[in-house]
Image (cartoon, rainbow, N blue to C red; front, top):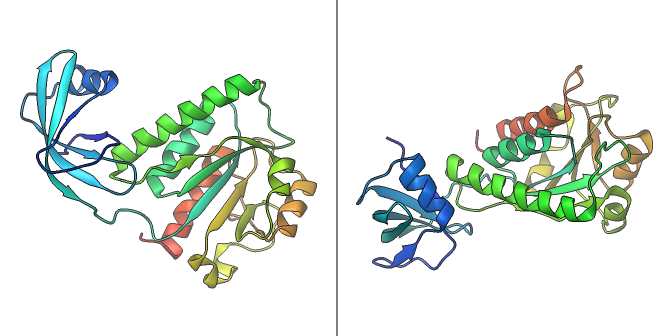
Length: 244
C-alpha cells in the first residue's frame, strides 16, 4: 500500500510533533480518510524526508510525530531547466506536472512572440503561485524530496539579455539533428530546454537562442504540441543520460 506523502517544510527530528495545515488536514482526513496512528511520509522540499505517525485530533486538526529521518537519493542525476513559453489553459499545468514527475530541476516560464495569453502582471504572478503548488503536488506523488522552483515569468527578450552562454537545446521542427547526434559531454552540465508556445518559436527567437549557446534539435519528423514537447525531450534525456 502506498504511503501518503505531505510537503511539510520544517526541521525534522525524531520524536518531534509538527502540525498539518488546514488543506493537508482536509486531504488526509476527509479525502484520503486516514485514521489515527496511520503511517505517513513528509518531506521538507530540500532533500529530506521523514517517516511519521499521523495524529488525528478531529476533522479540522491533525499533526504528525516524526519517527525516522532520512535523505534518500530520488533526484535525477541531470540538472535540467525547462524554459517554457507560457501556453493557454491547462496545457502549462500539464507540462509542469509531468516535467516535475520526470525530474526537472527548475522551470522558467517565458513570454515569447507567439504566446497567446491575455493576463496582466497580477494574474501572471497568481499563475506562478498556482504552478508552484502543482510542482509540490507532483513531488508528493513522484516521491521527490526536492521541489523544483517555478521562477518568475519573463519576457523572452529580457530573459535573453540576462544570459551569457548556456548549454542545452532549443526545440525546432526545422532542425537537422536529433538528440542522438549531440555531444554527450553536455550531460555533465546544467541543460536548458527551450520550448515555444502553441505557435512555436519564431525564426528570430531560435537564432537568438543559438547565439547564447543552445543547440537546435528536432524530436523526430513530427511536430509535437507544446505541452508534449517538454515531456518528450525530458524523457529522452533521462533515457540517454539520466536514471531511466
